[in-house]
Length: 489
Ligand SMILES: [Cu+2]
Image (cartoon, rainbow, N blue to C red; front, side, top):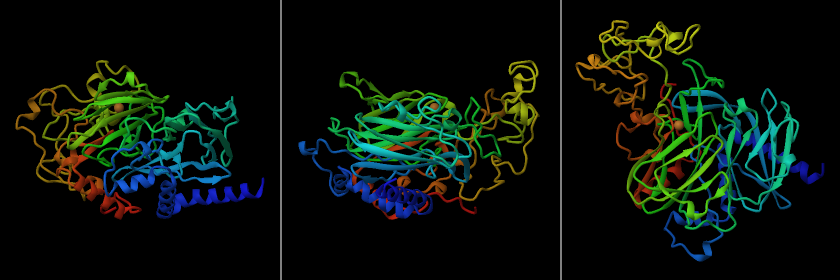
């Protein structure tokens, strides 16, 4: 190993360690590097005044923002951009107070976002700090076979404590991603965005460019480790956060906005945007020809796919952006079991195990089990009784710090109406936690908004310039501070 190379690896290791130790220092370093990136100076200037698009701006890349996910810094080594990724266990707070055990990269799941320019030569050092072997696949990259990261065929798996150095030249452009090529590791969070900016800027030019990674986890109550074998998921995330902990995408009224959606999991996600009509302008294979840009407001992002959507944010307001699968708009979904009542005498399911759908014998629709998967059928069932510490009890009862416990709005005859209450029905004013997820991007949202935002859900906030600038200013001030605090914990 030559001197320069050794020096680099040492500094790269320091960068890796720094990512874990000092978010602030790294943020400053990233800031500098992003400034060096073509287009960043332009981005800075934009905070003061919205520039008129000029021909000279062609060829300038607009950096992509991945809310809640760090950017991966790099170092130059004789014309090669060198990145360092550490595969490791990660404690990820996906929701206030809900810290789960995932596997990711450099302290984050999803891993940090890599941004390069078309034509760049990159070297990516992958260290394995997992207790088992891993391999890194560059999804959709047209690279030499021995750089593909297919364990067993293109390389040996990277042993625990081991390292593999990937190096290739990128001739493609678009929304790509990297991920572990061990299937179960994918289900533990091991993916990150890899944005290749085109040599010649896309037309029409976007003002804001975001990346959102879609993930899902099955975590049983009182567990912190996802069940990677499960086929139904109860925690759905955008960039590693479940609503309302997701960070809204902040845009100026009139901006042209690009959102890059990336999906790697067991489910396909129909992502829907309120109040706007978009076009799908790119896939995991790069930019789509313009002749394919049909109008839409929902895009199905299949497993292993990416979809770029673009629209002009011409409709002011706070607009939901979410997966439209009903179960993916919920948090911690599970069948109703035990004493969780909204009113006296709610028909509950059977025991914990049956209620969770973990059958020991018989089929789910059998005579004995049918009614238990979910809840009982009988109107006025007395299978369950109201308990004094129920969080949903109307007369006050238990209070969670930071949560607004409103009175559940339930009709007097609610229990005599077939279909009430719905399983896992937890939306509403009593679940609001505006203060717990307070951050600049949420400034000015309607009070109680957080009670209706769950799972794969966030806002695209289309703001007038003064409000936009205010949020950006606040965000600048808060940089490096932990945005989410669980009071009393
Ligand atoms: Cu979904």
